[in-house]
Image (cartoon, rainbow, N blue to C red):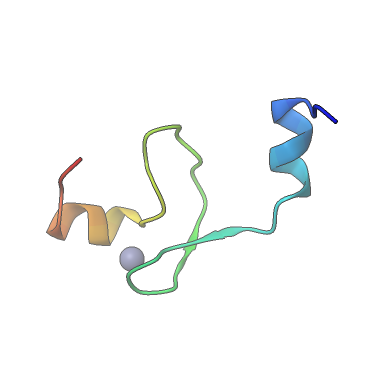
Length: 45
Ligand SMILES: [Zn+2]
């Protein structure tokens, strides 16, 4: 079954950074799964 994207995200647990495990508040589409701190350190696409 198809789900609406908004509902999909609503049902997700908070994203956690794959690097340090810190919770990620922002959910920008292209953030991947790293927090701002880790993105700042290893910034690549
Ligand atoms: Zn992190």
